[in-house]
Image 1 (spheres, rainbow, N blue to C red):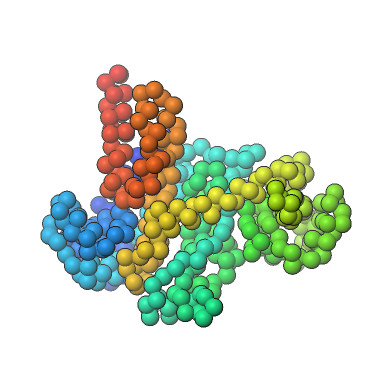
Image 2: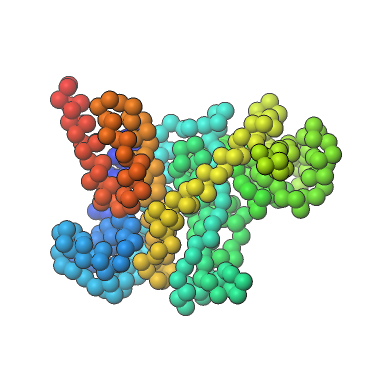
Length: 381
């Protein structure tokens, strides 16, 4: 299943790049990309989706040497040309990778439900005036340009279903609401949402329930009344709140970590579905989204932006999610086949994936696996 997903994901990107000139959403300037050129939309998309994170000029020269570009171009020329490419068109590659996954791959579930973690992460930017003014700043002196990224991430399949990038001062809860709308569009409205202690509010919990989602959310110590009740009566777990005249039931657990620290969790799942021990185990899966951010930032080098404009940052943020989902698909293919005696060489795939951050390299790497195997099967027929 992941092999078919990987194949469709690569084919989807190639076809979308090939048809980009026809798109009404691709251009920010109506007069841009009218004619094919060395810095036309197709080549710009190819470069962005390769995840070029070395010196941009070296990357451009490398593509010229490989014959991808018909002539070498300057970094300045590329930076100017990419300003006409709508970041939302690049976003469609990330969105498409999630849509294809939902269509092609059977759900990996927990007690029949997908489990989706939602979390935000600071995205460090260059201290360029445009980025400082648009995204805002972090740090004690409020002087470091920073954006806020947010993912909706399947903790079992390791696929990012939705991504958002916003001003640093944006509300994580508001971005979570955008994720919820996107998850509903994908038909994932019965999933369990995992979220850390920055997210809970009675309003947010009610919104999740009203939209058909279940949740397991960590609450902070500042929820004093509930925390004290759990500490005093750990076996009394059923609670409710009323909002706009409607009653909402939930359960709360105080769980003890291996460090002997306490963690307080609230859930819409009933006791027959999720016990305290199961809640502790399930919530621990939320750490997967932190690992995914680490992969995107460190291996795909998200924060090493090749462009210093708002448009460039958004383009590369969305491209990184497409690449991350593609890398996940390739890894899953390796996991599924690694025990096959004829494919023991795949045992090195996970190691090599840390280096394969280019769409073109991934395509070339996957071709023998997919095409040759398909030819072998055809021959057997």
